[in-house]
Length: 91
Image (cartoon, rainbow, N blue to C red; front, side, top):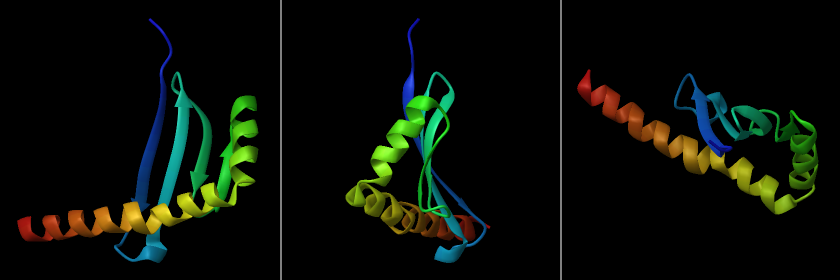
């Protein structure tokens, strides 16, 4: 009973090269996606009235945008390299 708010960070890729990696940061409430940042779009997009308001606020904050844009290299590239090497050693 209650409501669930959560955030998902994910990386979509088809190679270990940075140009082939997309970082996605999504906020959810009760399984409904409110807003998303995608490194290929370069800004937040809202999917609900509440999400649109938050996306506008985050898009007007240069430090928030810079932080999310940096996650592609900091979060995705690092983890993809580790996972890729682990997969190669097991194959």
